[in-house]
Image (cartoon, rainbow, N blue to C red):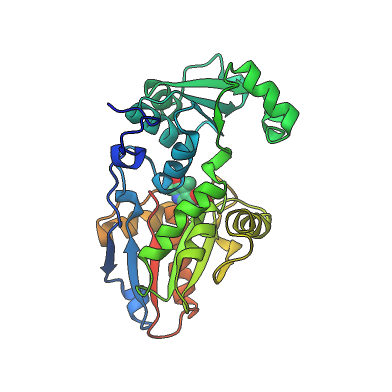
Length: 302
Ligand SMILES: *Cc1c(COP(=O)(O)O)cnc(C)c1O
């Protein structure tokens, strides 16, 4: 298999064969139809079988920038980003290092998500929470790279969101040009939204549903867009009401909603991001937040 650094014209994107553009499917849902609203599903979950979630779009530009160096990145014990990075490493024959939050995890059996990372060849390096919080500070990062014996690594930030990733997500918006009035996406770090908003056409807007609690995300998305594009791009806003208490938190109501949506539309609804997004959209449609004739595209990220 060609290595990512090989100069024979085969790119990592070729090896990590994506299904792009991802399919856009209209579904019949009376909770939208009764308000004259169309619901479309943008199936980013179908881009790649092994790169969990929408992570292909964010990861591939970084793999290309890494030019064959090992990839080092960060995540919690259930991070989809760590899983996707590990899977890409296996498929490309690229060493990967995962810095995992929580040194108490080091002596224990790995949970299924981290076990998958390890099986894909990712070297796991556990750090305590206070160091993890300071990982972006240059001295802490340098110490971490030394401790992980990965000083030559290309560093991808937590959640995979940096300028390269954001520019990669612009293609998601470009695929949706002229196809919907509102594009809705669940947000973790906000990198996907930052790129998506920049790729859409005039008259289209993005609605972000943060799955984490806290009002940091507006500023973070503005910062990511400034880093990637030199300033704010596109028409976007966030609705902070649907995180269910924070990352990883769910309610019985959310589970019931997701199970019902699965039964209606034969779609497996991932609970930590996608369920919160769809729940928010049904709530907004019910409130009459979308004018009659609006086409809403929900990005199914996993
Ligand atoms: C990572 C992820 C997102 C969005 O990620 P951002 O960090 O906001 O770019 C959405 N859904 C799923 C399932 C994800 O794994």
